[in-house]
Image (cartoon, rainbow, N blue to C red):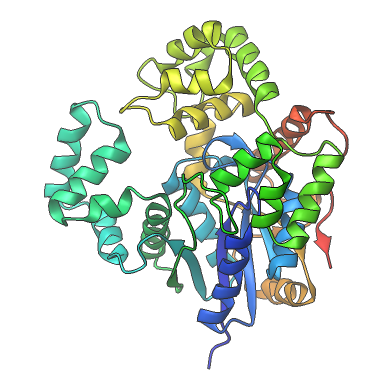
Length: 400
């Protein structure tokens, strides 16, 4: 029987009891000998800085049951679901050892393979409906949802739930690249992604809200003891981004200094939205107020936030498109235990991209652009802390 190695795509922003359940279930349902996690870098998919640095989130993952943690480079982790999921699956496949991809869903029995096939093949009726919907001013995500619902009733509802949507994106990439990976959905535990109910099992949204409010008891209840210890230490040493006040001040200065002409060259900017960025930067008093003022049917909150982060990182349209064509050309090793180190040795012969621990191991060319953005992201993240630039954001991998 082939040895199974489970792969997980995660942000752990921050790590909570639902994540610990996911790691345990991934090992159980696949009978895996090891678990590999692809972890977002300093900025996350929804278009915000992570609340904790990658090293701390890596430690939580290893303590929670992961054996090897590798990085999803910043140009891909702070992006739409298709780019985010596609790059993460590329990395898991590139290890040469991962056999199964395990992901949570709100609707475990949803026909995600059928939905993924339609999105990949784009039959004529789907493309026509998509174009019609876009002409009405709807966002791409909503237009796509309505178009696929016309072909497969109920599919739009499936895609409207965040974890379902990511699940479809994972499967679509597996189909597109014809990877020998088995998709293993598991039922997501607890309240919905945006639910703010507090308790033993909380959404990451509710957990971040409790963090911002300083509700330590809620954090303690919803996080495993080791994770709560890590976040408590980060809070005590001012190494936690619990609010967005500094982010907003930084963004506002950036938008006003650059102006609409220069912002127009940044990744995903289109249709004159850059002028609205400058206009609202003049009047906005908070980050939330700024994002709320720009959110619409055409431009959902996540897209606005990601566009803003691209501006902050200096990720321009040309570079963004080139990196999407190339995909992740390498991945940083963030941490491993003994089993993970054995995997790394095996990957030395089987991996199709470099999995590096030092900058000197990174290939020349476009990979250096990815590394440059990683350095920019790390230094900006450190600068947003209450006490800025406390330590080197590029520590060696955590080996336990």
